[in-house]
Image (cartoon, rainbow, N blue to C red; front, side):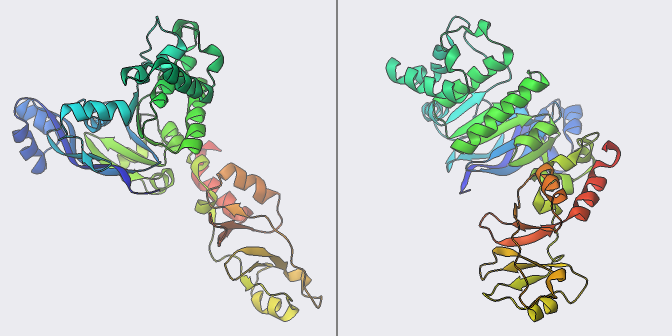
Length: 392
């Protein structure tokens, strides 16, 4: 991940005739409710700052009325800010002239809304190509590009159909295709899947994650559903009363919820599903040995001098070469056993499957293959018991 794609600094939006009075009250510690009771001004967003990195799915989450939809409309300036800055690729969206803003929206930003907003009289292909048509791209080129995107979202066979002939899930894929066709560097998705039934919704999340693996776009995704946020978000910002109360990865938010409001989102949700090998591992549970061409019994005995039954053998770059067991101490040259490694980001279900099938603890490695810890059956059981509690 590189430099931030979007930087939001001290962003505020007050709806009403005297926003300055409202901002002064907020600065003095008043709540959104206090401001409304005393001035009639409505605080949409107050003093929000964060950045979105290039290539991540950044989810804005909160209950209805928390300010998340106002916030994204400030980011693409469908709503004018009362105070603060929005920088996209270093340009302040709040101060660019309208002509530049229109070009930015056409070329660099795409929006996907909850309502599919397809044009009923146009074919699927024509709907998918619409953004390119508005941008002045010739018919042949725009249809070629739109067809490529329809293939990516699995709709190529339906290119000549009308929206009314498609299911809701397929219509939402057309909306996604239309947003992708202009090849935006930033996609804004406002409750894009929330009108779909749970199965279709999961299917669309999978389509999005698959596209993201291939294309690494920057996506701002608004949702009120924690499970959706956990499933697709690289990082999540949780909003309440127009403010951001916590920003973090799904794991960080599960492990350290900022307050009771954040905690309440997890009620009745089995959060263990979002854990990874990195959350389960221990860093010093298994002794480590330096690899050498000839491993002798005395160095193994010295390494296993406590109660440990196994030692991992690492090379000079901390990569796993295998493991040695205590029961090999009787032989003159103990055998180096091969062992599979688990990536730090491996999801819990995969970790459980592999740990259960292995008699030894399994090494956990970073993306570059270097050793960072180990997991065994006991770790997994402890974590499952702690997180699942009443859900088991």
